[in-house]
Structures are given as structure tokens and as C-alpha cells.
Length: 165
Image (tube, rainbow, N blue to C red):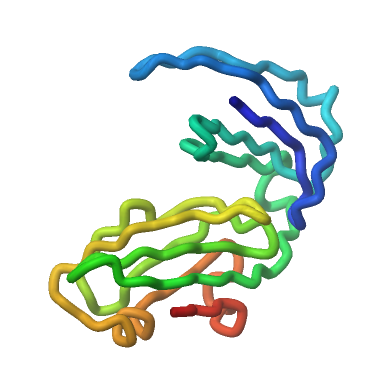
């Protein structure tokens, strides 16, 4: 199932369409074409799409309608739930109350591989990210070193980010 919708930065949906799809592995095809002038667009809206297979979201993407210099993104309140999966592997459950453009995750002063460290976050949606660290560190140290940034509030998010265990 492909779900296409137009929503504002706070998650209110103005248009939604569910399209049954059957996409074979390692292929691509055009599933949906819409004239932008036929959609309820505004400077505070995004176009979003989710591909759902077996009840699981396997792909999600969003695009702003206006140019970035013309939008005024609300300051997000981001929650990051951290859990240790096994030695040197952590899982982050990242969510926000509003649309987040260019959310960036990093681990200060430590070598780490994030399976996704830069993405847009749709309101009322979450992203699960696995983090693989080079050496064994405890969860408290990990959370102290975890950094979260987002466009355009790169230096101003400390109070808006909650890291939870």
C-alpha cells in the first residue's frame, strides 16, 4: 500500500490517498502522478509518502512545497529513546511533535556507524536508527555523547531534545 498525503508542519492532514501497489523486488515504477496545482498546498505544508508492506512502513519520504528560504519551520521538540541491543549496538527511536527538516544524529568524540544519521522526520511518525560503536561504552556515556541537530535550529536545540532510556 502506498499512502500519499499533504500535511502541515504540525501533522494536520489536508489530503490523503491510499493506493494498492504490488512492486517486485529490485524494480521501480511510477505509481502516482499529481498536478501540484490540484493539491491543497501552502508554505507550511509538505508532500509525504509511505510505502507499507505487511503492515510495516518500509519507505517514507517527505518534501517541502516551497523553497527552504521561504518557509518558517516550527522549533521541534524531539524525543530520542535509547536502548542497548547488545554489546556495541544501540537503537534509537526518534520522534518529534512537528516536521523536522534535515535531522542529523552524531556521537561526539566516538567512532560510530549510524544506519541512517540524516533524514527528515514527519510529525506523528518515528524513525528507528541502529548505531554501531567501535568500542564498548555504557548507555549513560552513549546518551551524553549523542548529538541531535536539525535545520535551521542547528545550535538551538539543546532544550528541545529529550534523550530517554
